[in-house]
Length: 89
Image (cartoon, rainbow, N blue to C red; front, side):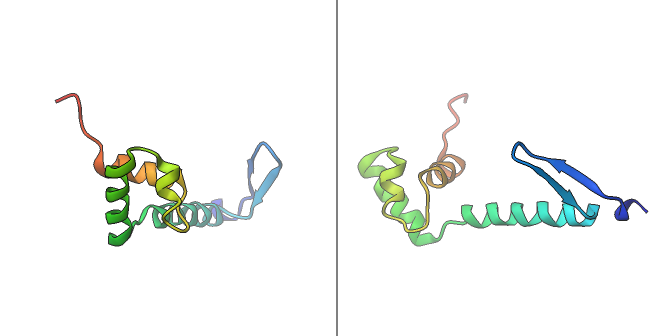
């Protein structure tokens, strides 16, 4: 059966052995849900991000410093996904 075959995924550091296709899919779903959780911004966080952006502009590390558990990259990604302007119109 295809689900029982061993699959290998090589990374730059080492080789990881996956016992089945189902394990590979489950691992991928877990990483996607973790990424989605990190981009979930509460209403209070969004309010703070907007206020800070209006004060300091796109200084993402300064904004992230005011929100525990958030990185500058997360804040910037969130901002760009929610508040980007389409200049091609």
